[in-house]
Length: 237
Image (tube, rainbow, N blue to C red; front, side):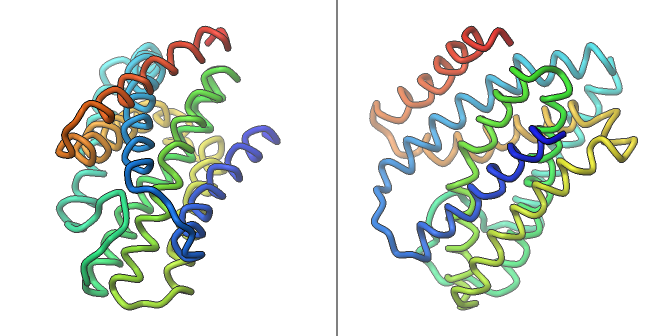
């Protein structure tokens, strides 16, 4: 449990790091951010398809497939139906207070499941847990940057922007801590994590870079998948 806590705290801290990059007015490259998103997408989709989903199906069968689909749909509803204005990256247009709050609500569900995913991965093995943790952290910094940027664009001030990113970190820790204590999460956490991770990789991150054009981002996407296989081989997952 101590190892899970450490990994969870690092993942939660990555949300704060993303907010810190924006609020500290540090200079960053939009190209580098796009490359990070493309790389993260390749890594996350690989973890979901090769580790999380097969293990969930082996343990839960048909019901696991239903839970994975439910997780996918739940994130879609919260991020792109209820909250219609979220994207990974800096928000450059003014948005309403309601839009920023709706986006935060959608992300809280997603980040809660990030914590469930880390805990569930370590329940399979230390190696798989480390892979899932890496997949989570890779998108946490852009996520923290995005939500804090959205709150600033809604005119809510730097303090609230930072607190929004902090809330994502708290949700991650809640998911991690509750997985072993709540029966439905203990039984279906893997399947839920697989569905949500697939959504974030395929429906959040891939569209972010697909419209950019050029060769750099597709290569970064393939690079994320390739690095996943290398790390998996090295860790013996």
